[in-house]
Amino acid sequence: MEKLLNRFFFLLLLLTLLTLLTAGCLKKPYYPGKDYGELRIRLVLAEETVMIRAETNGSMITAGIKKILIQLSHGKGHLTRTVEIPYSSDQPMETHLSSLYPGKWQVTAEACDEEGYVVLSASREVTIEPGSSNTTELYLTAAPGFLKFTFDASEFPGFGTEITEGKLYVYLDPKTNQSTSFSLTREGDCLNGLIKLPAGTYQVRVAVPQTTNKVYESPYYTVHIRPGRTEELTVGPCEELIIGGTIDFPPETPGQLALSPGEPAGSGSVIVHLSWADVPGADVGGYRLYRTNNEGRFVWLAEVGPDTLAYTDTVTPGAYYNGRVGYAVSSFDLGGNESLWSEPVYLDKP
Image 1 (cartoon, rainbow, N blue to C red):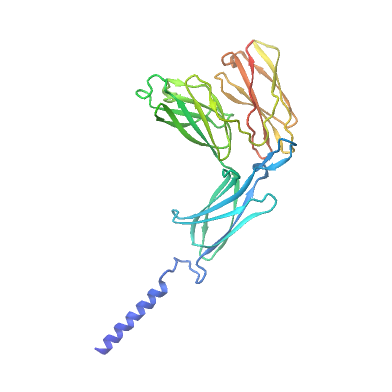
Image 2 (image 1 turned 60 degrees about the vertical axis):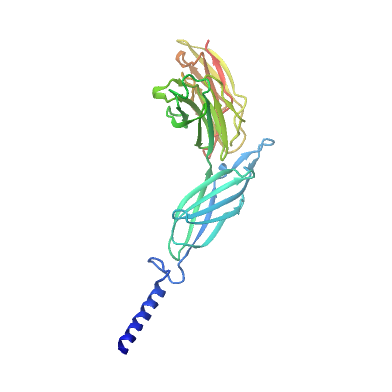
């Protein structure tokens, strides 16, 4: 009997020791004393992404970035780490985090300006192995903005009964005829939508309920989207757009766009001469011209070099919309960033 009790206590002690040794251990691979990993984060900013031109003397200044917030989220967000680092335009921006639990982490960086708006952002997934040291680079690019769109349908026939929805069509690439649609939902006497868009200038139009079975299709409207900001656009049937503010975005928009009709080109065509003012700066890559099509929407026309400040176009009789043709010009830098479009100029049909 005594021997049985001794064996029982021995087995109980052995089981207890095994439990203590294995408790809290990570899945293999496992390095005793070095369970957690560490991560060094390096932020990379393209100079043309974060610089704007001073209006006074044409020199380059930073876009007012005040701080950068870095957040790490593990798994389904049960574990999070947040650090804040200052922005520096002339020194490397790095931060180091230790004691990171092994597994997949989502790393997000957001650069905020003095008003707290996120103007640059980046995100990527990083896998941390037990006991490992890791380095990752985040390439900060212009953060998206938002368009708060409202279609006032208070005087629209059948709204609220036969008509309860609509769509906003955004032309993200002026070189194509493709649009991206966004649903608008009814709120009272309006159709509303909050739409996330890349920073830039776009043409939009609204269709009720949609283009395939439309009972109403608006003219084209031009919207300017700034990183991290929400722009408001309110329109009604057959009314001009109501938009708050004009937003500047690097590089500068070419000014003094002028149009002068030239001699007839035969078969009813007209030659048009365009000119605009130079945008100063060594990083200007050239200029892009846009012209309305026969539906009244601005589409890509041509691209010229930085030393070219004039363009000659031929307008055929079928190119007019409501008896006129419109032109606009923008500038772009060597990094591919495009300015906002200029104010349009129009040629009336002879």
